[in-house]
Length: 207
Image (cartoon, rainbow, N blue to C red; front, side):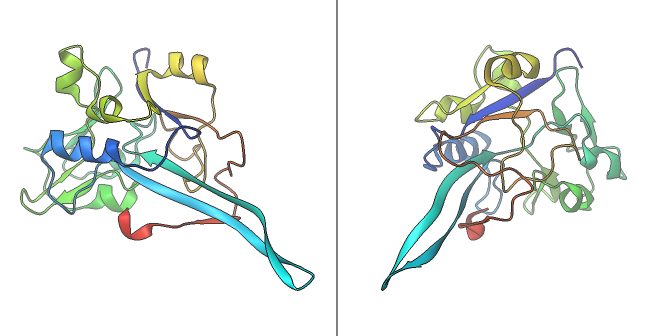
């Protein structure tokens, strides 16, 4: 798709402040239990014994801000029995609220947990790339709200040319599964890839 839009996250700049998450919830008036953009803290390393003391070894910690990846191969679209999910001309994956029956198949299938059930509406909801803001020449709310300018957006090929092709930081899944339109700038220190078992999510209750 020539005009496919995507996101970029600079892991060396993200501090986990969640300003992007707050901006998204505020702009879309989301209920408390619905979070379209989430920030995971991934940590790892070990303590080794040195004499009579234990010292840290290979300790690392970083934050990964994620929302819907607007994938080339969106599994949510494939499993929707109501044909409520579509991919528009800009590659944005959207849910038609008039067609959605709230079965939650898309939620269970998406490896990123992007579709989320809104109990007030009785339907699934997810990041729609702030299409209304884009139509007015504005940035998505999360990008505009990022305090440290760790987020960017645009045509995915331009983002890859500018930032590279790295799209699989832990704790995300193997990108070959859905071919996400997201690119990350890794930290200068240690950034584990998707197939690493060296760390764990430190804040699962926040996701």
